[in-house]
Image (tube, rainbow, N blue to C red; front, top):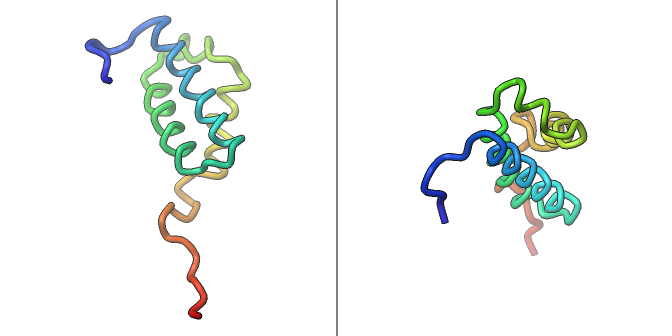
Length: 89
């Protein structure tokens, strides 16, 4: 269900925190496709924040969003769906 109006202020910060935590929980559960999708949503919202609002995001979450997830899901990685070649039986 889509919100009727765009988030702003504290609600936006809270939603960014929530989405990063959800992405991390998917990461911990080794659910990479769901983690990638949730991380992209969190990153889109994070990029709408002002520098002052970004400072309100806990550092641990910011580091995970920018560094750790970029390391594993960045553009330099093999995109999902390419998969390995299967052995012919």
